[in-house]
Length: 175
Ligand SMILES: CC(C)(COP(=O)(O)OP(=O)(O)OC[C@H]1O[C@@H](n2cnc3c(N)ncnc32)[C@H](O)[C@@H]1OP(=O)(O)O)[C@@H](O)C(=O)NCCC(=O)NCCS
Image (cartoon, rainbow, N blue to C red; front, side, top):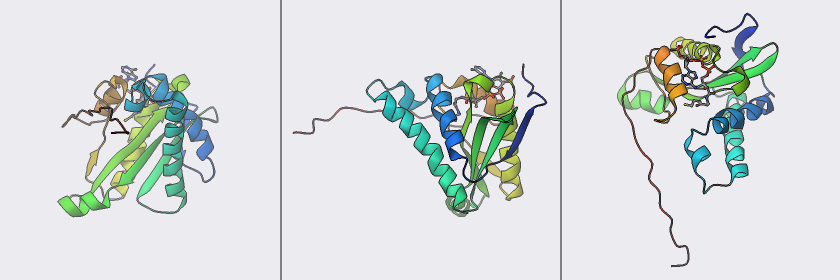
């Protein structure tokens, strides 16, 4: 435990393989029942799954479109896609604060491949990419109850700096 097997490797996302990542997204995010949409019983499960699939599909399209401010790295284990990380150089914040700024946009490891260091290996590769783009400050947002993600980020040198909550209420559409 804790060490990626010899068969694990991290590589860049290849054009046309979005559907492989779309299989992992709902398994990783809904399996643990941690992310905000995954735990809201008012939301239809199928739509939540679609949401997670659509999210990674959108990032994949953006990378495929050739915009250089986003990159996806894929973890492969025994030729199977085990996880992915989405990175972004944040031009608006870089301009706003005068610090070359980047973030981890998304990270997911398939439940069948978790606890073996794949998450940390993906984070490390993603941070190397940000560094290669001149980034000096990296951020990531995660849920307060997502202990696995916090552990993985803390093990990679991140420290918690801010926490927020989401509030919601029902409205009567007829009034
Ligand atoms: C977060 C996630 C990517 C971690 O992937 P992973 O490959 O299992 O992570 P690693 O094996 O590299 O472990 C990283 C650290 O987290 C710890 N960890 C992993 N899963 C954990 C869990 N469920 N509970 C507590 N700690 C956990 C590991 O022990 C390790 O800590 P250490 O270095 O101090 O020993 C994975 O759990 C996942 O895909 N979760 C669902 C999606 C998600 O939450 N993504 C992040 C959203 S911001």
